[in-house]
Image 1 (tube, rainbow over the protein chains, first blue to last red):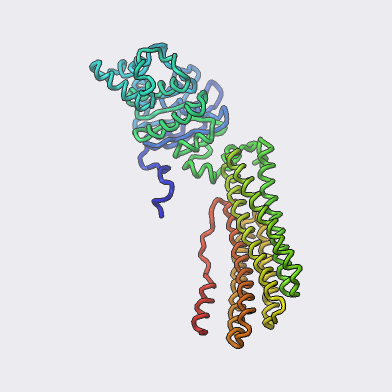
Image 2: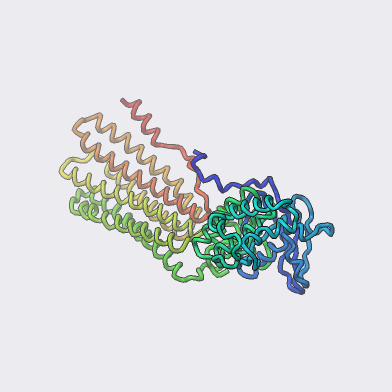
Length: 265
Length: 238
């Protein structure tokens, strides 16, 4: 009978992509992340949920050192991707961010053509030797972002001329183009309509065949739909981290229960 | 942890389906008590009241299912709220079946009016139905109070209902073998006993749903099956 049950929600926790230990983040005097330990599996969608200001975006931004760009921000503890400490002095943040791509809340295409938006990353990281290579990467990335059929006849049109949902998928294509191993998504659907949201969610499910996806979302239903693992953050603490179906049917911590059932916490 | 939802109407919706199911429980208890009373006193009119009353229970069941479906669609409940809605739907189905059994007892009572009773068995049936009625009453209390220990106790208690049924089974069989004129009434009375025994099983089902709503786990069914003993007994006696 097992083969009739829902099986696609499985994730292999033996294959750890990101391992964070004792992570603390301070913005000046504010203690934003308090001693977070978490292991993120490869080829799995992990969702971070929690109320505003709980630290989920801050933690996400630690995973590709986006917090380096904030002067008063200080990160302690260790974060390793494939066993390599990403805060090691020898690690080049620019190279790291090619490996750990990011998609933001608001679609932010470059004020360039659709083609150049996607080609930019592979160009600066030297991933394409010839124009033909680059064309291939652009097409493959746009296809993976489920945008190719809509834009293939107007690759030279400005990226900013696309609809919101298309722009977000363009940003995903841009992130995918540098062949990342991890994709971080900070509320990728909050500015999109339900159809574009569904397209992005479908895309997330496809992307996880190839890499580890970490998504921050305020929509708990979205977390429930797209992820295999869910982490609940509250006041800078990682309160509960478990299989998504467990979190949404039988959470163990009363704070998680209060939050996901919409009670006053 | 605060137990109120930020959206107050969510609480009202959850409250509403629970009170409907509790109301159903009250009606089922009453139907069972009336059916037992009608059987004991050979009261065809009271039996008719029970038969007609089942319609109300069926309507409430439909009402609970419709409201629960609406709640699932509109509120997307999670965690204990989700488990509560699922449990309420199951409990409603259990109670609806109990209503059907009470109705069947009333029908058989009407069919037997005029025929002689098998001595002794009526008081046993009365005792059994009072026992099972108590199970329904207590299991609904356990559900309202989210009392897992009490629910577990009811699951245990069902063994006793099964044992009373087995005793009655043996006694009906004996009576029917002694005098074939007892067969028609004996068959009716046996089905009545079986109906009451089934109501006990549904009380157990409600207890299991209560445990699920509270803990998120369904208890495993590892109790001995006494019905099987009845079957073995049947073969050896023939």
